[in-house]
Image 1 (cartoon, rainbow, N blue to C red):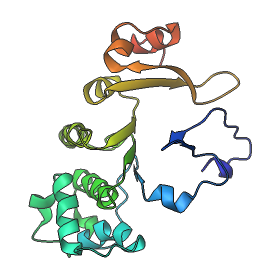
Image 2 (image 1 turned 120 degrees about the horizontal axis):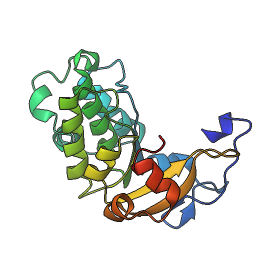
Image 3 (image 1 turned 90 degrees about the vertical axis):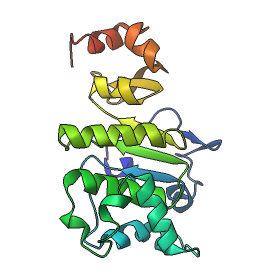
Image 4 (image 1 turned 120 degrees about the vertical axis):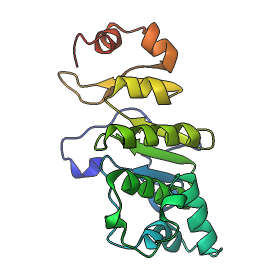
Length: 202
């Protein structure tokens, strides 16, 4: 995505299984099958609930029991009981919170090793937000989850480790501090981190 921004500059590395994802010889298609993505706003495809979850499996040439894989993914996303009797209905008929859990199920279906979440609850009401947070906590026992949030309370509730990034005068998205979540929120090492956590700037 950075390639689409002419002025974008990248420093450092993003390592996955020992490889830098910015290396030119990295197989992007293979990486996409191992890293799932959930966006800020629910983005179900204009297909049935079933076909939404099956999409990634079909793209990756899944040869197993499709019905079983669909059910497993929906159960993992805590959505199965709510949709099991209407799998052929349009995903667009679901509520916002259900659509976001469907998108999580779609990401889980290909059994990724890492799940990236870009503020997955920011467009949801408080009840749906709590459901997503509980789901993230449960999934974190089995998957590596990287979640972006501006909600500090949410970060404190759902994460084990926290990284604080901010915009500088000459650069955007640089890492200020990283560490155990409890340490970051109670005894941050960098004054900019402390200023943000205490609300002196946002």
